[in-house]
Length: 329
Image (cartoon, rainbow, N blue to C red; front, top):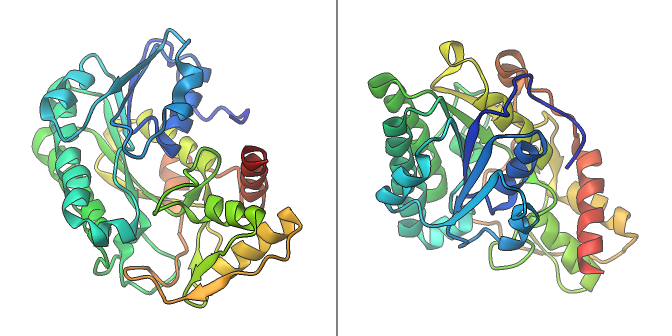
């Protein structure tokens, strides 16, 4: 956790629910809220992709509560929303390739589970419901930088699920008066990101493979670009959004990124340099469903939310590589 406070409000009398709170981004949000004295921070996670190790340090905090359960169960969602002021909905099945292989599971968690949480939050009259959307929503829209109002056709079931979340959010605001804000994440990375499994994130995967001197794959020519965004910037955005004035911001979508673009090749070489390694990658076919280039216009989040990313690519990558170096050494 880094020593920057993003909120002005006193949260000592506020209760927060973080869905997917044992996951990468969710557990970092939990850490921030506990650090700054939230009255209660409740986590629901079925541990399908989240990890107990991400939240174990919080078990001794009396303000922390963990419920191992699944958002695909509406009764569970209703139960965990009781007495909650603010919701940060991070629970999802990520990964474009996984969604192409398992569209039914992606839909069940990301759409049906999301709808359950909206219903539960509405019924419990939460003050604000913030959810994680994705830059994948931009689909085949080629213009750069990406502006919230201009999206294309989705290229994967994952993108469809996240766009569906945005549509449901607007309907729940207009129909039921639920205060909702969506955050379109651009390639979030950092400590606690899962380095293992079939759908491991690219940065911890690169670090582990380079350190282990095992084969590293880069999809396509590696010149595809991304707005790599350090996780602490996503934490800031969630905190600002949850505590935002609902009279002026509800049912809106914001890009959450840095506003910098780097290719996968540049990323790989930066990690190589930090690890003092000459280990070379292997290039393979382009991955289905991937966007070629991605760069965010973050002016709306800056103006409306007061979002101001503190960690650029270089700073965030140095912290992240150091974290995984220690983890693997």
